[in-house]
Image 1: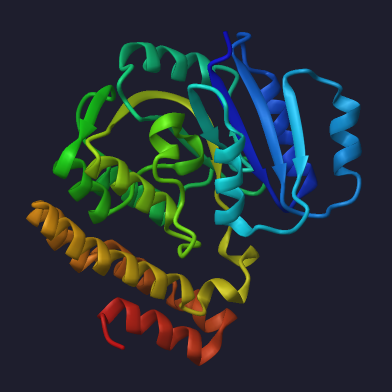
Image 2: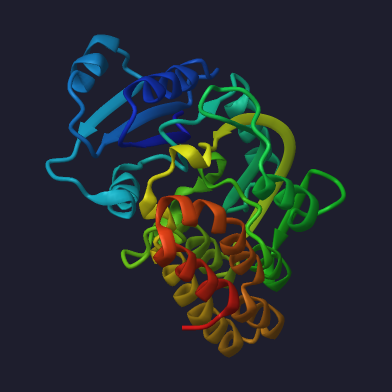
Length: 296
C-alpha cells in the first residue's frame, strides 16, 4: 500500500536535482512515490526523466512558472498518499530516511509533522556549519530526549523565538497540510506560517534524533544581491506582527509576545550586514538596520 508521497518542487541546478532524485530512488520499501514538479525550462530535464523509466517516479513540467509558493501548492494538489515530503531540489535523503520516518509515523500516528535528524552540507556536499545552524542547535531547538511529541503554545513560542525546523526534511500528514496550504502572499516564511496554522488547529510535531537527511545551505558568496535588499525581512516583519495579533486573540499571550518581538529575525538581519554592504551597498545596509532595530 502506497503511503509516502515524496514531492520535489524543482527549479535550478540540474546536477544537484539529479543527485536529489538518486537519493530518493535509494529508499527502501514499496510504499512511496517520487513526484517531480518542474517549474523551470532547463534543457534536457524531461528527457532525463523519460530515460529513467522508473514506475516509482512521476514528472510534470508546469506550463508557466508558478514561483516557489505556487509550486508548493501545485505539489499539494498532486499529492495522493497519506504522508508527503516537500524536499528541496538540492537536498539529499540518506538511504534510511523513509525507514526513520516510517517508524516515527507508526509510533506517533496522530502527528501532522515529523522532524528527523538533519545534517547541513555546503555546495560541495561536505558538512557545513554556520552561525544560523549553531544557533538553532544551541539556543532554539528543544533540549532533552530526541524523541518527543510537541504542540500547543509551548511549541509555537519555541518556533517563533527561533525556527529550528528544517522544512525540506519534514514529513507531513497530507490531509492536515492540505487544509491550509501555503499562503500566496508569502515567498520566504511560508513554511513557518503553515506550521503556526497547524499548531493553532491543534496538530502536533513528532521529533526523532536519527540523522537521515542532508540539508544544503549555500555560502553567502553564492547569494544574489536580491537576498540583501530587505524584501524578505519586510515580509517577515509583516508575518510576525500579524501572527502576534492572531495569537493574542486566540489566547496564546506568550507566543504573541515572542512573535511581536521576533528577536531572532532581527538578529539575523544584523549578521547579514557585511553581505548587504558587499552585495547591495548602502540601501542593503539600511534595510538590514531598519529590520534589526524595528524602525521604518
